[in-house]
Length: 314
Image (cartoon, rainbow, N blue to C red):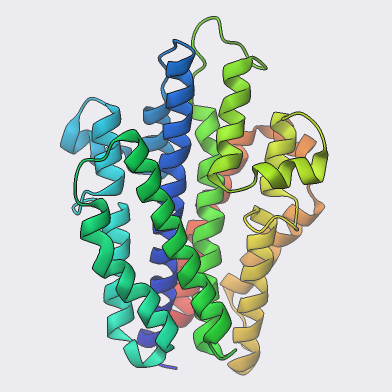
């Protein structure tokens, strides 16, 4: 496969996943902010959302002060923000169109129909209820895209590059969504373990569609270290960091086997990250600092992406 084709498939999958993950980050901020208001508190939920999305510098340059409406508009609809949902879907469609003949009919339909509905779904100002409905639509379209390529693509290098894009982006954003909680400051009088703290952790689980999974696995009240364990170290959790690293490692191995057994820095880094997670415990992660662990993981994912690009996509 031409490296240019591989790159477009890789980024098509990444941008469709990024749109989904940005929707989940905004939902987490929305739910946390709504809960704080219902308890008569003013929190830093939207500031946290900007920080964890990695979009704060661009937002500050454009808007200055943080308000809910401005943050939502910047992360959802702003075409000048390359990580906004609108930008992600448009970029994904551009990549799909460029390699149209490498896609299955269902992949193209899922991507193109999402792009065609984009302006209608996200073009205007949204009420709180409309916001949730619009973000749920983004999640549904991402699920449709993932289902289309998982169920219709041949298991060859095109599929493996698509999978790499999906799971690199998912790992990065699961870490970011979990780190939202670090940046949210509890108001005075609301301590750790209180009602607002509880609902904030619940919002994290809801954002990654894991609230029911948590109770299925643990059978007890929400506890921060168990939420973190589920999203970091539980391999049965589809969005956990360890499962994403497992999928990345597997697909890199498939590519190595298909390209003469050659391996590089990306294979070594992915295997090392997966091994550390397999051998780690949540107690060790909390002792060293959850925020520090998550930001370090995001940095390693960026490096891994650069190594994959250097080996396969240039």
